[in-house]
Image (cartoon, rainbow, N blue to C red; front, side, top):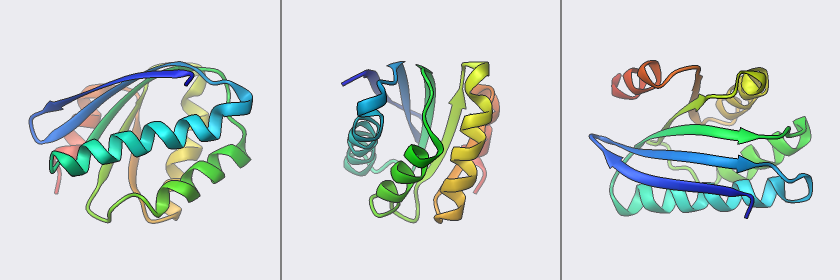
Length: 125
């Protein structure tokens, strides 16, 4: 897998830190696999809020984004909220598209430039 990630419980949410490099031929499968692991951990620990901090380099195509969101739509419970912090400025426009696509599929997802705003959003009911 091209990504490394750690998960820790932090207050009322699950904090996930993801780093690595996207590999073109494995972007979709790797992304779905680590989100499945994150969602399994969220379910096991009864955490509905996920703070995801991303430090991942490399680009993802628009079609790959749609494929990932469509696959995850069936895995994410309705009560899950995901705050996605993009730490690499060059990826922020792409992350905005991910957020729009996720929300169009009924996923409570919001992208942020910093952790403080993301954490605050997770605490809003």
